[in-house]
Each structure stands twice: as structure tokens, then as C-alpha cells.
Length: 218
Image (tube, rainbow, N blue to C red; front, side, top):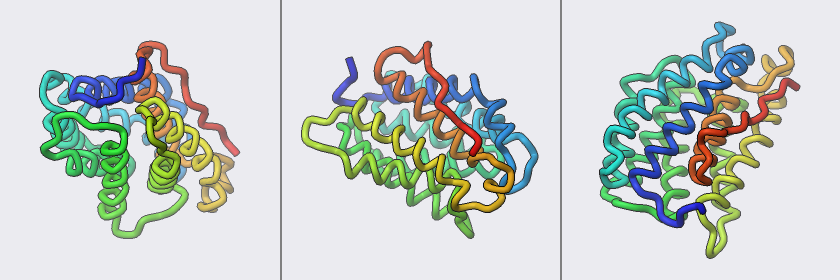
């Protein structure tokens, strides 16, 4: 059963499950990597970044939510690799900033924290490029927040988040010519999709059996 209140323990499990699910498919993400340079390491970079955060979060799993979120964000900042890793670390930094002083959070508070992640991620990039992980994260967070209704739980929120993230990822080649020319979707956006899928599975109690979120070429 999906919890109605997010604790430090649950957040730590979500981050760890997100990292584990990305790890299962990081070669797929690597193979999609053509922007900003085709060096084939986006999956590796994002995994190393979030895995740093997961290790820190799990070590503090009994702490209040804001302490766990802060530890994860701080570790991701120091462990960030590559452009997508840096953006991912800023997403979690924004989440942590909004949750400051919060022992537990309901879904609306967490949705607001996710929006803060959008602001932090965009602010961290001198010239934000649409059709990347930035777009996928922003569009999914916006859509999931708009669908929030009274009585919504974290499972509903993350299901909506993941649905829009998939749709947004499929649109990335329409926004970035280099992706369309290569016939792929954005690698950073694909990595984020695997992370969100893992987090949803943790919420629903079957993180050990994460299904890979599709990252299809166009």
C-alpha cells in the first residue's frame, strides 16, 4: 500500500530504488547519448551521481525527511558527473531546499518541492536547452501538479509524473535537431525516466522488480 505521508526512510528507499533501476539500463542511456557531445557516458554519469546520493540517504534513513533529503543532495553535488549529473544534482538540491525543516511531507508539499527542483535545475545552466532532461523534468512536474486532486496519494502523483515524462521524452527530437538527425530521444531525459520508475516502484513496495521504462529511438 502506498504511503500518504513521506518519511525520511521512504525517501531514502525511493532514491536508492531510482539509482538501482537506472543502473539496470544505463547502457541503454549511454547508447542514446548524442548531445551535447556523443561520448556515450550519460547513463554512467547519472548513475554515479544518484548512487552517491542514495548511499548518503540510506545511511540516515531514520532521520527526518529534510535531513535525509539534504544528505542526498549534498552527496549528489559532490558526486555529480557530466552535464546530466550536475542537472540531476540540482534537481535534488531544489527538493531539499523546499523540504528544509520538514519531518514528513504529504503529496502536495512534495509536489511543491519537485517544482523547486525545476527552478534550481534551470538556474544551474547558463543557457538552458529544451529537448533535454530539463524539459522532461519540467513538463512532467508541471503536468503531475496540475492533475493533483483531493485525496491523491504518492502513487497517483508519481504515476502521473511518469506518464508525462514518457510523453515528454518522446517529444525531445522535435525540440532538438541533433536528436532527430540521430533518430534518438534525449539520453538525460531517458535516465530520468528510469529513476522515476524506480522511485514509483519503491513507493508501491516492489523496488526489487523494477520494470525498465521505455527509452525508444524515434
